[in-house]
Image (cartoon, rainbow, N blue to C red):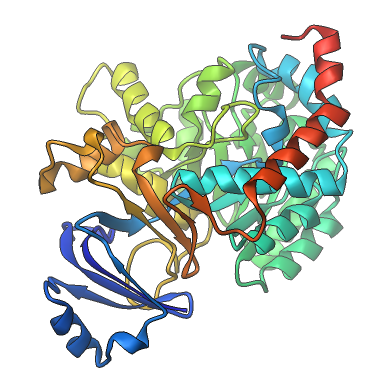
Length: 444
């Protein structure tokens, strides 16, 4: 597929490269060419050595903004079935009384349809790739491939599901795919015994690979680990060799001074999930402090059961807004840094080095932002980045492209399945397995 997008503003997300006007040419899923200040069609065509017949499609961007797609660095896609049915509970009650019992009833086919529903939501938010942790991974993979969506899987090993052998199998299997890849991971310290943790460390050593997990999400989690092991979760896992080759930790809300030092030394990414942490009353991650200490930060939504929406615009605003309050400093975590967390940093944390910025030869995973919407006006070039973080919303996503294919455009999906079919199947899963039981228990 050969696509030409002209008459646009371009934000590459490269350091010290301001927004400029030009066009982007895409071929076979990659950015073939970026032409700066191509004001006239004839100039652009002559520079690219072609004619109108070269293109399968030409898109007049009408002065809108093209930028890298957002990367959701932590999520649990199939948990769409629990949206607004597991609310207003503390984390452990939420997990033990609602989430775990409900998930036990899901079939592989259920997971397929629930994943497609999540994909639709990601696309409307300008998300072009996710870092997904869930079971029935084959069903999630099938949904992602059928829809054309880019996904990095994170191992979910714990004492109840998956094994080190399964993790290694999927590591070797999915890292051969174009749209799919895999990172070593386990659910959390509090769900994974020491023998399995040692197996994860052995895999990290074998493949010289980073490891990812939930970590320090609540005070109770940290105190419980210290009572069992005499160390914080991060210190304990590091003592086992888990993070010898780096990795990432989802949440990192409750850290002690030693934790910052370990994270910096090991090159551990913090993946902050502000909306989920607020909804579950887990706390506010010390993002500004991590930035000050040189610890890289990315942004994730977490799953739609604890969020409840998969909206990167909301996460960006909360990331900066909460830090300003926490630090009592309105200058804390400026808009450009937040935008980097949602794009470049998240791509790096997920191992997507060929989809981090807009650059010739990189993957064509990009979005067009509608600057004609009222929340972008008055419009000045120097205010666009701040507008994205402080006033941007899903209404501004004009299209979302993954691997050179436009999967969402002007409210319509192009993912191989009609949206009404997906809605029907998701509702059927809910009615058959979950909703009646939850309502009977009177949890809400």
